Image 1 (cartoon, one colour):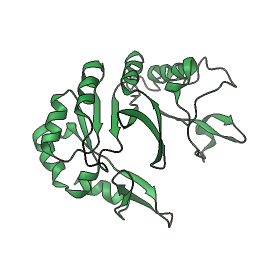
Image 2 (cartoon, helix red, strand yellow; image 1 turned 30 degrees about the vertical axis):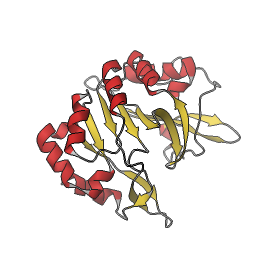
Image 3 (cartoon, helix red, strand yellow; image 1 turned 90 degrees about the vertical axis):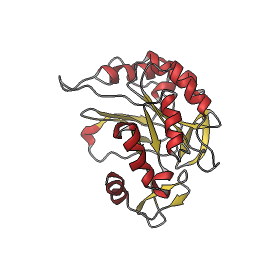
Image 4 (cartoon, helix red, strand yellow; image 1 turned 135 degrees about the horizontal axis):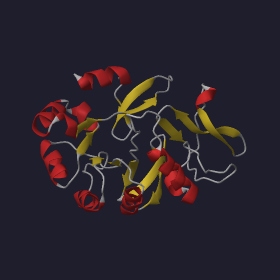
Amino acid sequence: SILNNIPPKISQYFVHSYYVNCENKSDIAANTNYGKTFNSVICKENIFGTQFHPEKSHAYGLKILDNFIKYSPWSLFRPRIIPVLLLKDLGLVKTVNFKSPNYIGDPMNAVKIFNDLEADELVFLDISATIEDRIISFDLISKIGKEAFMPFSVGGGIRSVDHIKKIIEMGAEKVIINTACFDEIKIIERSAAIFGNQSIVASMDVKKNIFGKKKVYVRSGKKTTHINPLDYAKYLED
Protein backbone atom coordinates (compact mmCIF):
# COMPACT_ATOMS: atom_id res chain seq x y z
CA SER A 1 0.00 0.00 0.00
CA ILE A 2 2.77 2.44 0.88
CA LEU A 3 4.49 2.00 -2.48
CA ASN A 4 1.35 1.89 -4.63
CA ASN A 5 1.98 3.49 -8.04
CA ILE A 6 5.67 3.96 -7.24
CA PRO A 7 7.72 2.44 -10.08
CA PRO A 8 11.03 0.64 -9.42
CA LYS A 9 14.41 2.23 -10.11
CA ILE A 10 13.38 5.82 -9.38
CA SER A 11 15.63 8.43 -7.75
CA GLN A 12 14.97 9.79 -4.26
CA TYR A 13 16.64 12.53 -2.20
CA PHE A 14 19.21 11.15 0.26
CA VAL A 15 21.30 13.28 2.63
CA HIS A 16 22.54 10.73 5.16
CA SER A 17 25.92 9.04 5.31
CA TYR A 18 24.59 6.05 7.24
CA TYR A 19 21.83 3.46 6.91
CA VAL A 20 19.97 0.90 9.01
CA ASN A 21 20.33 -2.83 8.62
CA CYS A 22 16.87 -4.33 9.19
CA GLU A 23 17.25 -7.73 10.87
CA ASN A 24 13.71 -8.89 10.01
CA LYS A 25 13.71 -9.24 6.23
CA SER A 26 9.90 -9.31 6.10
CA ASP A 27 9.85 -5.68 7.28
CA ILE A 28 11.92 -4.45 4.31
CA ALA A 29 9.69 -2.75 1.74
CA ALA A 30 12.45 -1.52 -0.59
CA ASN A 31 16.21 -1.44 -1.07
CA THR A 32 18.46 1.07 -2.80
CA ASN A 33 21.69 0.46 -4.66
CA TYR A 34 24.20 3.29 -4.52
CA GLY A 35 27.61 1.70 -4.66
CA LYS A 36 26.16 -1.03 -2.44
CA THR A 37 22.68 -2.26 -1.66
CA PHE A 38 21.06 -1.11 1.59
CA ASN A 39 17.60 -0.97 3.17
CA SER A 40 15.83 2.28 2.26
CA VAL A 41 12.17 1.59 3.12
CA ILE A 42 10.99 -0.31 6.18
CA CYS A 43 7.34 -1.02 6.96
CA LYS A 44 5.87 -2.91 9.91
CA GLU A 45 2.16 -2.74 10.72
CA ASN A 46 1.42 1.01 10.93
CA ILE A 47 5.08 2.07 11.27
CA PHE A 48 6.80 3.25 8.09
CA GLY A 49 10.35 4.56 7.77
CA THR A 50 12.42 5.82 4.85
CA GLN A 51 16.12 6.45 4.59
CA PHE A 52 15.45 9.24 2.09
CA HIS A 53 13.37 12.42 2.26
CA PRO A 54 9.97 11.91 0.59
CA GLU A 55 9.05 15.60 0.98
CA LYS A 56 12.11 16.57 -1.10
CA SER A 57 11.79 13.79 -3.68
CA HIS A 58 9.39 15.47 -6.08
CA ALA A 59 6.19 13.83 -7.30
CA TYR A 60 6.99 10.25 -6.30
CA GLY A 61 8.14 11.29 -2.84
CA LEU A 62 4.90 13.17 -2.26
CA LYS A 63 2.96 10.18 -3.54
CA ILE A 64 4.64 8.00 -0.90
CA LEU A 65 3.53 10.45 1.81
CA ASP A 66 0.03 10.51 0.34
CA ASN A 67 -0.09 6.70 0.40
CA PHE A 68 1.07 6.69 4.00
CA ILE A 69 -1.58 9.17 5.12
CA LYS A 70 -4.33 7.15 3.44
CA TYR A 71 -3.07 3.69 4.44
CA SER A 72 -4.94 2.02 7.34
CA PRO A 73 -4.18 -1.60 8.30
CA TRP A 74 -7.05 -1.67 10.78
CA SER A 75 -10.59 -0.39 10.26
CA LEU A 76 -10.68 1.36 13.64
CA PHE A 77 -7.22 2.86 13.43
CA ARG A 78 -5.44 5.26 11.10
CA PRO A 79 -1.70 5.94 11.20
CA ARG A 80 -0.65 9.47 12.12
CA ILE A 81 2.05 11.25 10.18
CA ILE A 82 4.04 13.74 12.26
CA PRO A 83 7.01 15.30 10.43
CA VAL A 84 9.82 16.45 12.73
CA LEU A 85 11.64 19.50 11.35
CA LEU A 86 14.98 20.73 12.70
CA LEU A 87 15.77 24.45 12.75
CA LYS A 88 19.00 26.42 12.84
CA ASP A 89 19.26 30.15 12.10
CA LEU A 90 15.55 30.11 11.12
CA GLY A 91 16.20 27.57 8.35
CA LEU A 92 15.44 23.86 8.09
CA VAL A 93 18.51 21.66 8.50
CA LYS A 94 19.48 18.01 8.52
CA THR A 95 22.21 16.67 10.80
CA VAL A 96 24.31 13.52 11.04
CA ASN A 97 24.87 12.32 14.61
CA PHE A 98 24.05 15.81 15.96
CA LYS A 99 26.75 17.35 13.73
CA SER A 100 27.19 19.12 10.41
CA PRO A 101 23.75 20.74 9.97
CA ASN A 102 22.97 21.16 6.27
CA TYR A 103 20.40 23.73 5.13
CA ILE A 104 17.51 22.03 3.30
CA GLY A 105 14.80 24.67 3.04
CA ASP A 106 12.52 27.32 4.46
CA PRO A 107 10.27 26.28 7.37
CA MET A 108 7.24 28.18 6.09
CA ASN A 109 7.46 26.41 2.73
CA ALA A 110 7.50 23.13 4.64
CA VAL A 111 4.35 24.15 6.52
CA LYS A 112 2.59 24.83 3.20
CA ILE A 113 3.70 21.47 1.80
CA PHE A 114 2.43 19.55 4.81
CA ASN A 115 -0.80 21.55 4.80
CA ASP A 116 -1.42 20.26 1.29
CA LEU A 117 -0.48 16.72 2.34
CA GLU A 118 -2.82 16.93 5.35
CA ALA A 119 -0.21 15.84 7.87
CA ASP A 120 -1.63 15.21 11.34
CA GLU A 121 0.89 17.30 13.28
CA LEU A 122 4.18 19.17 12.85
CA VAL A 123 7.14 19.32 15.22
CA PHE A 124 9.73 22.12 15.09
CA LEU A 125 12.96 21.80 17.08
CA ASP A 126 15.55 24.58 17.18
CA ILE A 127 18.72 22.53 17.64
CA SER A 128 21.02 25.46 18.39
CA ALA A 129 18.83 27.48 20.77
CA THR A 130 20.09 25.91 24.00
CA ILE A 131 23.80 26.08 23.22
CA GLU A 132 23.36 29.69 22.07
CA ASP A 133 21.53 30.50 25.32
CA ARG A 134 18.32 31.66 23.65
CA ILE A 135 14.83 30.35 22.90
CA ILE A 136 13.25 29.30 19.61
CA SER A 137 12.06 32.36 17.67
CA PHE A 138 8.71 33.66 18.91
CA ASP A 139 8.25 35.42 15.58
CA LEU A 140 8.62 32.12 13.72
CA ILE A 141 6.19 30.39 16.10
CA SER A 142 3.65 33.14 15.45
CA LYS A 143 4.04 32.75 11.67
CA ILE A 144 3.65 28.97 11.91
CA GLY A 145 0.52 29.42 14.05
CA LYS A 146 -1.04 31.61 11.37
CA GLU A 147 -0.11 29.30 8.49
CA ALA A 148 -0.41 25.72 9.80
CA PHE A 149 -3.72 23.91 9.39
CA MET A 150 -2.65 21.15 11.80
CA PRO A 151 -1.58 21.15 15.47
CA PHE A 152 2.12 21.81 15.97
CA SER A 153 4.70 21.48 18.72
CA VAL A 154 7.90 23.44 19.26
CA GLY A 155 11.10 23.01 21.24
CA GLY A 156 14.44 24.70 21.65
CA GLY A 157 15.81 26.59 24.62
CA ILE A 158 12.57 26.41 26.61
CA ARG A 159 13.47 26.84 30.27
CA SER A 160 10.55 28.45 32.11
CA VAL A 161 6.79 28.47 32.64
CA ASP A 162 6.71 31.96 31.12
CA HIS A 163 8.29 30.61 27.93
CA ILE A 164 5.68 27.87 27.74
CA LYS A 165 2.80 30.29 28.36
CA LYS A 166 3.91 32.60 25.55
CA ILE A 167 4.43 29.73 23.09
CA ILE A 168 0.99 28.24 23.74
CA GLU A 169 -0.61 31.68 23.41
CA MET A 170 0.97 31.92 19.95
CA GLY A 171 -0.87 28.82 18.81
CA ALA A 172 1.41 25.87 19.60
CA GLU A 173 -0.47 22.85 20.95
CA LYS A 174 2.55 21.43 22.79
CA VAL A 175 5.98 22.48 23.97
CA ILE A 176 8.94 20.11 23.89
CA ILE A 177 11.48 20.31 26.71
CA ASN A 178 14.84 18.57 26.60
CA THR A 179 17.85 20.04 28.43
CA ALA A 180 15.69 21.87 30.99
CA CYS A 181 14.24 18.51 32.08
CA PHE A 182 17.70 17.44 33.15
CA ASP A 183 18.71 20.79 34.65
CA GLU A 184 15.44 21.40 36.50
CA ILE A 185 13.03 18.45 36.54
CA LYS A 186 10.38 20.45 38.43
CA ILE A 187 9.62 22.40 35.26
CA ILE A 188 7.70 19.37 33.99
CA GLU A 189 5.55 19.10 37.10
CA ARG A 190 4.86 22.84 37.33
CA SER A 191 4.05 23.22 33.63
CA ALA A 192 1.79 20.17 33.51
CA ALA A 193 -0.16 21.49 36.51
CA ILE A 194 -0.80 24.80 34.72
CA PHE A 195 -1.24 23.81 31.09
CA GLY A 196 -2.17 20.11 31.35
CA ASN A 197 -0.15 16.95 30.74
CA GLN A 198 -1.22 16.92 27.10
CA SER A 199 0.67 20.17 26.42
CA ILE A 200 4.06 19.16 27.83
CA VAL A 201 6.42 16.79 26.01
CA ALA A 202 9.71 15.66 27.58
CA SER A 203 12.24 14.63 24.97
CA MET A 204 15.68 13.06 25.06
CA ASP A 205 18.63 12.76 22.69
CA VAL A 206 20.29 9.35 22.74
CA LYS A 207 23.57 8.22 21.25
CA LYS A 208 26.30 5.71 21.98
CA ASN A 209 29.29 6.70 24.07
CA ILE A 210 32.87 5.62 23.35
CA PHE A 211 32.14 2.26 24.98
CA GLY A 212 29.19 1.59 22.67
CA LYS A 213 26.60 2.11 25.43
CA LYS A 214 23.49 4.18 24.73
CA LYS A 215 23.27 7.23 26.99
CA VAL A 216 21.09 10.32 27.21
CA TYR A 217 22.73 13.55 26.03
CA VAL A 218 21.64 17.16 26.52
CA ARG A 219 22.63 20.55 25.06
CA SER A 220 22.04 19.43 21.47
CA GLY A 221 23.84 16.14 22.00
CA LYS A 222 27.02 17.79 23.26
CA LYS A 223 26.88 16.89 26.98
CA THR A 224 26.41 13.38 28.33
CA THR A 225 24.26 12.68 31.38
CA HIS A 226 25.70 9.15 31.77
CA ILE A 227 22.08 7.98 32.19
CA ASN A 228 20.52 4.96 30.47
CA PRO A 229 17.59 6.05 28.21
CA LEU A 230 15.12 3.62 29.78
CA ASP A 231 15.96 4.78 33.31
CA TYR A 232 15.67 8.40 32.24
CA ALA A 233 12.28 7.81 30.59
CA LYS A 234 10.94 6.24 33.80
CA TYR A 235 12.37 9.15 35.80
CA LEU A 236 10.61 11.69 33.58
CA GLU A 237 7.36 9.74 33.72
CA ASP A 238 7.41 9.73 37.54
